[in-house]
Image 1 (cartoon, helix red, strand yellow):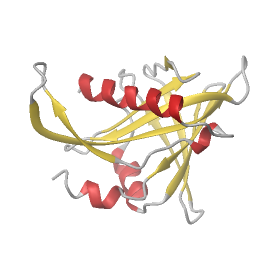
Image 2 (cartoon, one colour):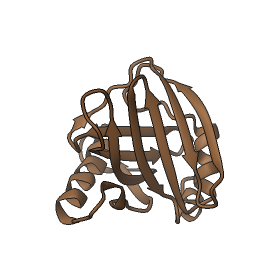
Image 3 (cartoon, helix red, strand yellow):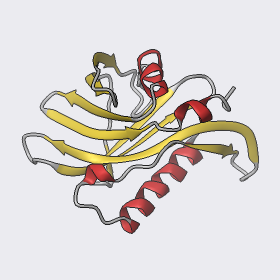
Image 4 (tube, helix red, strand yellow):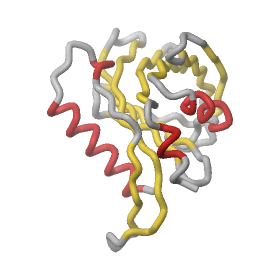
Length: 167
């Protein structure tokens, strides 16, 4: 799991260094199917879906600063989200209430609250997120935590095709 997060984090850094965009929300990749490796670097036969996103965040200290996000789903339908403020500082969500607002490609809006369990990234309610990803297209996401607002887009155009390969 740790190795998978590191791989996606490197992909995020690579994309940011290679892509020049007028808006940070323009940098995103569709989902990719990645096979995990064990501590010896051997393939495990376990696959995960991952997507790299970018966007912006605001709080009392900054406005519209850049952020990176890595979203992934494993074969047990667990969803993970890791957010990097300024594209480098991982945000820690420790027992926080997060308010998710998601707008799909058809303009339909959904909101839900997620109580984090103490993990910095394993907290997204898959029962609510996976049906949104299955609609495919671009999902616009807004997450509110106290005075901080995170905004980014997830490219789910190929989610269904790859999700079927997880089982």
